[in-house]
Image (cartoon, rainbow, N blue to C red; front, side, top):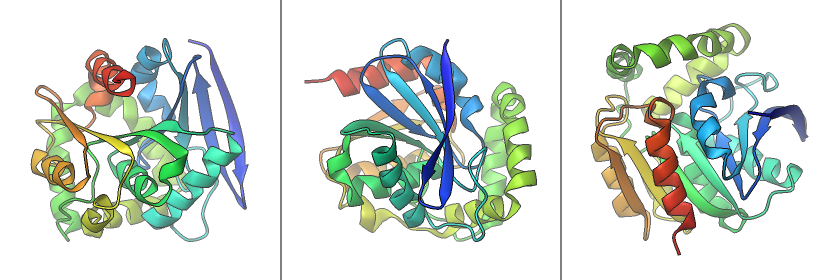
Length: 247
């Protein structure tokens, strides 16, 4: 799989972008607690039909360091400007976990820039208000995804070392930010793609967003967990391709 990696300047900050494949553009916002490398199994499948851009945004991965951690709204504004910098119009956008919240806000605030919106186990529908409760719930996912956990561990450690305040902020945002009002304003064609065995973002959250986002579709991976787009890449490729190519 041929890859092209580069830093993309957006205002005062840099995103790190990994590009693969040829075809209609697909932008993947890497979840802010891991990194682009974690998505390799999924990208390997999608890049056979699509031009895939995996983005590590500022405050995570190889993106630039932030003097102060960003809100999800700030990440969404940066994401819209990044699409301009990449000269992408009407792209498909994938958000996963915390970056699903960013993609959701982009779907409400910048709909003209997007053709399709795919939210994979996004946070923001049912905040617990307690970071410890969220941590305990996610620990159950970790035990159920041992291979993924080992693969993603280096990226998580990198974030702890290089972006420690942002890691803490992301956990806080996941526990406290309620994006249900934003969901009702999304006008982009949207797919909620969720794992039935996700303890971090329970299926009830996806069902709530599905009801709130006008005309949205819902797919439940019956064997999937929080990171099923990576651990079950063939299934995700099939679901994603069917959605974006549906007439």
